Amino acid sequence: MDRHPQNDWQSIHYDPRFDEYWIAAGSARQCLFFCPWCGVPLPESKRDRWFDELEALGYPDPLFDNVPAIYRTSEWWTRCAVTEKGS
Image 1 (spheres, rainbow, N blue to C red):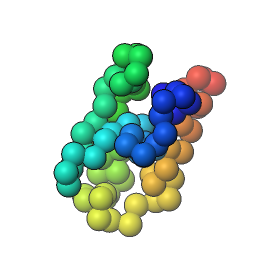
Image 2: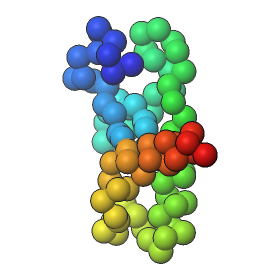
Image 3: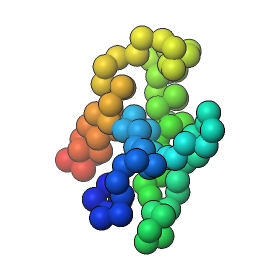
């Protein structure tokens, strides 16, 4: 979806930590589950897994704790995906 010609990134945002696309809904975020232009399903959110992994590492409130740098980007889940494919 990030390469779609109609996506000017003014209204649709991407959070690499969770692999989520979203739009602003007042002071909240509304996650997108399908591409708004072609209807293709977007990747499943990794939000729950992010919280679970950080809690297991001893970070009870990862949104406010100083979490490892790898968890502030997509590296934590892309590295795992590469490792799993190489197994």
